[in-house]
Image 1 (cartoon, rainbow, N blue to C red):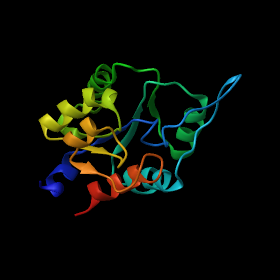
Image 2 (image 1 turned 135 degrees about the vertical axis):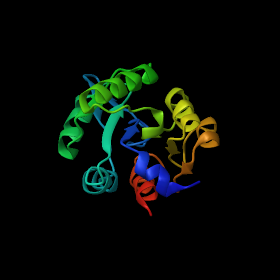
Image 3 (image 1 turned 180 degrees about the vertical axis):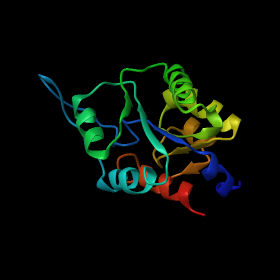
Image 4 (image 1 turned 120 degrees about the vertical axis):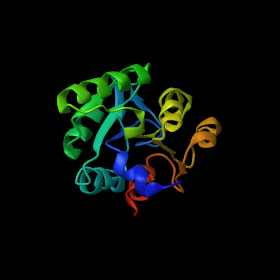
Length: 171
């Protein structure tokens, strides 16, 4: 695979949250979700490596969490879509909006996606088929690992996203 070519084409990094940016555990209290654990290395990779490289970080997740909104504010992630079980539909809408906004045509080839479970396959498969990049944490579902271009040595919420970003940006 020619990573240099892929890097030049990538404009969006779409990230799942639970099991990718977090360890996948859900800590609940009577009042609802209590907390999530994020790795500082992932955050640094997003804010200090990805964004300066001109790649837009995008969150598309099936769950909804005020905690995630707070984390995204810290990292300057403005594209956050929660409560999306149809992640591909949301990705298509995002590409359409950015294509119109920038007077360019963006497609799956301009995307990298990192996720950990079967719900992520709906985006990972067409992105990979179009020539974009797919990555996953070490503890991802086997079906996800099977199609990923990059399988991190780290588990979800333990720096897997940072490792994927560094791999993408290597030249």
